[in-house]
Length: 283
Image (cartoon, rainbow, N blue to C red; front, top):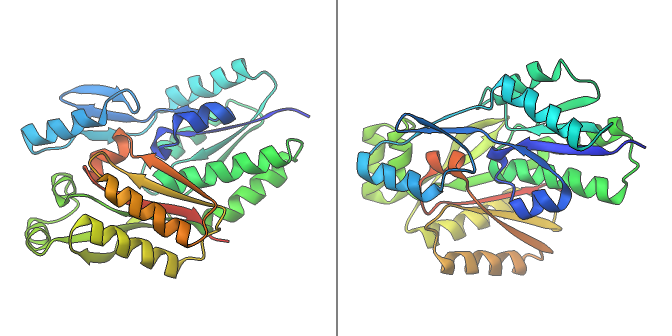
């Protein structure tokens, strides 16, 4: 049987240790700051936060382009000759990246693309689900594997609370009136992926330790997440005490594995420092 290789974008925030362990190929997206184009993963997140502190603006982000995808898929074929490639992509509802991958894929045989309709930890959850299927059955038929992955996409759940409204305001995602009201009342929006789109679904009031716990309780009440795995996403600045408390709650709810994911430059550009999110797949 020919080997199946999985790939995704840097916007999945898939930890490098997991990508390397499972040979998941990752193509970078882009962050543009002060007129310079950086590949996501090559720009320290702290520099984005420092830039915002200086300028009160945020960098812009852009998708992986068609040429980059073409080179990316060509390299996979070179590194893994005669492989079958299954690319699990960043939601097409929030980026042109998936559409660019579709265009590039026209020049390749045995290359299949799946729109995960998710980002960061929600996308990683789908990728690791696919990894686990392949590990259990390396001889699995590619069509069957794709069907199983696609069946889990509607069940991949991501909820995220930004650490600060400043980045949402700088990116034009909240009005000044909403920002001032939210800042005064210490209100933080909960962002979820709904049919592939980023939507504000709830509002929480309080400091981040209070909000993180409320988010966790609501998430577990709303979704019957498979207890085998839960993903916690954090941006630089989230306190260690919050991380410890989230681990405690996960253990209390009988999760077998906890994976912490640091939000990369692509995601941090929009979420700012000190954010917290949860991802998993419904049973």
